[in-house]
Length: 137
Ligand SMILES: Cc1cc2nc3c(=O)[nH]c(=O)nc-3n(C[C@H](O)[C@H](O)[C@H](O)COP(=O)(O)OP(=O)(O)OC[C@H]3O[C@@H](n4cnc5c(N)ncnc54)[C@H](O)[C@@H]3O)c2cc1C
Image 1 (cartoon, rainbow, N blue to C red):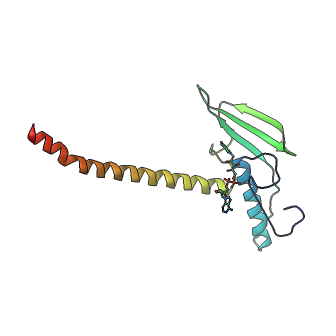
Image 2 (cartoon, protein in one colour):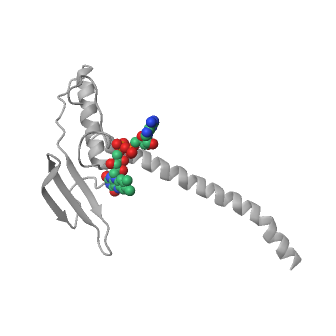
C-alpha cells in the first residue's frame, strides 16, 4: 500500500484500474513474495508486472488473448488460435494459480462423488417400486 509500511493488499479492492482474477492472483503472488522476504526467506521479491490472459469462447475454436499492461493501459496485445501460456488455465499466476486449480479440481471431485452417491441412493429407493410394479403387472 503506497505510503504505508508493512501493509499489502491485492485484488479488486486495490487502487489499480483493471479488475481481473488473473491480475488479482499476480498481485497476491508479489505481495506474498515481499512478505516472505521481509520474514527472512532467501528470495528477491519481483515487481508487479501485469499480464492479462483470457480465453474467448466463440462458435468455433476458442481464441487466446494476451495483453501486457502498463500504467493501467494495455501497450501490447496478441490473439492466437493456441494458448500462449502454459498451463492454459483460467487464472495465470506463479504461486496462487496452481493452488486455485487444485481447489477447483477438489470441488469437481466432491461434486461428482455427491452426484454419484445421490444416484445410488435414488436408485436404491426406486428399486422396490420397480419390483413391486413388475410383480403386480
Ligand atoms: C460477472 C463477472 C465476471 C468476471 N469474469 C472474470 C473472468 O472471466 N476472468 C477473470 O480473470 N476475472 C473475471 N472477473 C473479475 C474477477 O472476478 C475479480 O477480479 C476477482 O474475483 C477479484 O478477486 P478478489 O479476491 O480481489 O475479490 P473477490 O473475488 O470479490 O473476493 C472478495 C471476498 O471477500 C468477501 N467479503 C467482502 N466483504 C467482506 C467482509 N466485510 N468480511 C469478510 N469477507 C468479505 C466476499 O464475499 C468475497 O468472497 C469477473 C467479475 C465479474 C463481476
